[in-house]
Length: 402
Image (cartoon, helix red, strand yellow):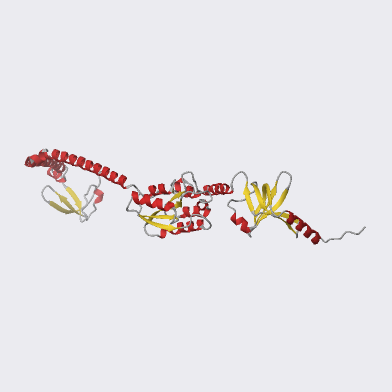
C-alpha cells in the first residue's frame, strides 16, 4: 500500500478552512449571547450557545456601529454571516454581518434599551420639564422645510395668532444623518434672536421613518436645549424618545401649533372678561370711597369746626386754673414745713443756751470748745462766748474735780 501524504499543520488547516468556508458562506444561527466583550478597536467578540453546544462569533467594527440596539449577555438572537477558520489558532468563528433579536424587533429593542437608560439618568423626569411661554415672541420650527408637517404648523399658528413670528430651521427628518442634523440645530437654536420656544418633529410614517427622533443624540440635544422644546412626531399612536424627553409632547404637528400660541378669540374673550371685572372692581371701590367721604362729612368736627376749638379752649382754661390752685397749695404747704423746721433748728441752736445764762469757752487759736479741765494748761488763751459779747482770758491754773 502506498503511504498517504503527510501534511503540515498549516496545509491541513488550510484545507479545513477552504472546506468550511466553501460550505458555509452564509449561515443563520440562533443562540444566546454570552461572554460578550467590546474591544477598544470597536470589534465585538461573543459566544453563541444553546443547551448542547457553543461557538465563537465576531462582529467587526463597521457592522457593530450600525446596530440599533446594545448587545449583552443573555440576549437571544439570530446571527447571520459566514463561518471562517482562524488559521493561527485552528479555530472557527461566525462572522456576524446581521444580528436580529428574537421575540422583539431590533428597533423596538433599541427603543426600550434607550428609554431605560435615559429614564435612569432622569431625562424623563417631570420636575425638569419647562413651561412654554403663553405669548412667544418668535417660534423656531426644527423640521423639514418641504414636509406636510411644516405646512400644518404654519397654518395652525398663523390662523390662531397672526402676530406670531416664525423661523424655520431646515433639517432632514429621515435617513442617514438626520439625527445629527436635528441635534445640531437644537444645540444652536438659542442663538436666533427673540426665539422663545422650539418645535421639532415631522409627520407620520413607519418606525423606520421616525427613527431619527429615537436616536440618543437627539434626546440629549433636546435635554440640553436652552429653550423649551415641543416634540411633535407622527400621529397620536406614535411615541418616540424625543416625545418623552421634550418639555411638552404634542400628539401631532397641528396640535403643536395649538399648544405654542393662544387663539385670538380666546384672548379677546379673556380681555373682555378682565375689562368687566376691572370695571366692576373700580365701581365698587368708588362706591366705598363715596360712602366713607359722606361719613366723614357728617361728623361734627367738619360740620361745626369752631365748636371744637371752643371746647379745647375751655379745657385749657380749666387745666390752667387747676394748675394754679395746685401750685398755690404746694407753696403754702412748703412754707409751713419750712417754718416748722426753722423752729426745730432754732431750739437746738447754741445761742438759746447762752440766753439761759450759760457761756461757751474755746481755746485760742484753734477754737476748740473746752469741755474738760485737762484741755487747758497754764498760759493758754481762752475765749468765752456770752449771750452778748465775748471775753478773752489766760489760764493761771487748772484743777480737776476734788
